[in-house]
Image (cartoon, rainbow, N blue to C red; front, side):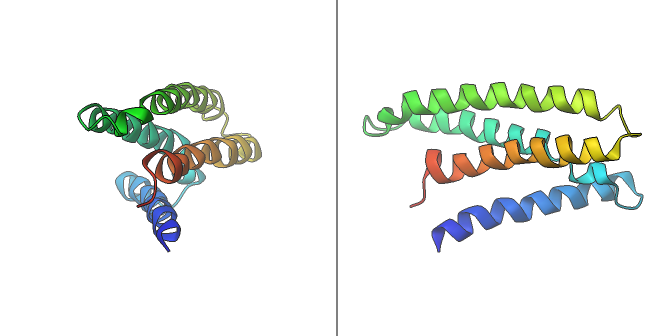
Length: 127
């Protein structure tokens, strides 16, 4: 049950993110509303950085998480830049909606979902 909650809450937030993009813009839904790879990757990176400060101020038992957490944070940062690079390339190509869907809606979103889910399931852990 904990796994369902740990994964469902981020997925609901992803859908809310798409809705917020639409509401802020004030027009009908667009495909770009669902290109959330940047936001998801940034959320995972931010969560990881916050958790670093949480672990650094805790007991020595939690200090064993420091190295894996550092590796995860560095991976998040690298993949965040990868996602940013894809967005920089593909958002300028509205004439190729299929490519945008594959790279921004598929590949980049999967990276972001993977990072956020990895943080929730493996880094922070389910208690």
